[in-house]
Image (spheres, rainbow, N blue to C red):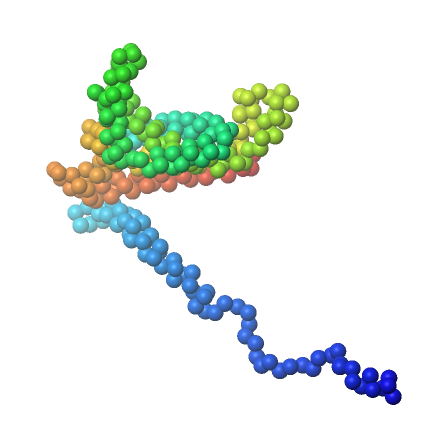
Length: 303
């Protein structure tokens, strides 16, 4: 009896099913799914107004002449030695300043990765500030320092080191362009050096490779995609530079950007459709350079 009573009073371990009704599926509601799209609307609006709309305007007006569709603007550009010189000067400045800026930034970033953390952070912060120092203030700073009567120019002339230097020339523009290329290149290359490991240098030294051979056989192949990408960005940055050059040279140096600005906002004559054709050719040049860069990066990853 006692055993039977205990057995009868013991609660059953199998719980009876409880009817809780229908449970909705565990997925975000419709408004939560659409919330990211709503948050992207301001960005999409700004991107459309300030990127897509100007590009569309340039693409349409480049093929307009006298109210009709025409290739007259391109024929005028391709047949004019003046515009040929503007593209030649722009490519010349962009290429050599990008190359010089890339070399200086590569060596500087490699040295920067070897210094203590506090100094490294301070240099990176200064580089970030210097990369945003451009336009008219940069041109004014160079005039004060390296102009005809600039403080640094007079000092170097007294030392006999800069008697032939002229800021208002191709050499002066190369110095100016290289200056604002270096901080941008450092910021772009700084994360790429994380791919290099310290033990690779030790392993190369054990195998008999000196510093030069280590750089040529290890560092440059590893950094080649970043170096190519940085070079293309510097090239585009230099090709599109306008404010610093115009503040320093006005219209005394023939560049594509100065020609475009003169055709759009000049004091003598306005030819916005011709300016649109110049802009379209400049964009096509940048697209070509970018395509070549992507091809080279793809080959470097498969070598």
